[in-house]
Length: 192
Image 1: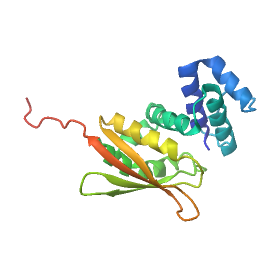
Image 2: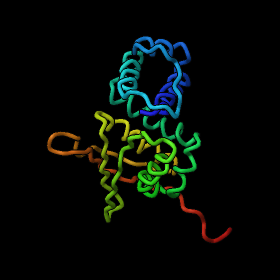
Image 3: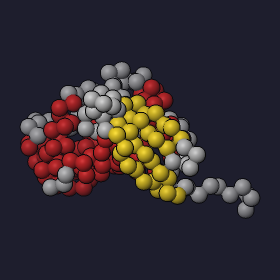
């Protein structure tokens, strides 16, 4: 994974628990380095070790840590130089969700070793959608749930997410059902 993700984890820990907690988490994870180069590629095992160490530090289950970080990641990435790419997709949750693959394609221009996930959105007549999440990495479904809530929060929408299929021998990807509970207010067309 790229260092930007590990830097996001570092930022998340230091903002919520302080630099001493980050140092302790790195020691537990068996890491000498306390910072990561955002544009450098790192072994995925480092990220997984950090997440496991955070679980031990906080006492939270893995799924909870991943979901909380996923939500945080939207703000962290949005504040980076990739934030404009995120906003290019549109103003609604569904538009941004549909634009994730385009955003990753643009990021690949500057991060050629990136192995981004892929998102396929099937909209339903009732306003809900089915999200197909493809990744070569294992165990990131809880982070995706957090990401979805973070994206919805960015657009002022509230959602409900349920995972309806997990990546397995029978299914090559994770599948989520996303229901929009309320939509962002639309700008007034009266000009008042």
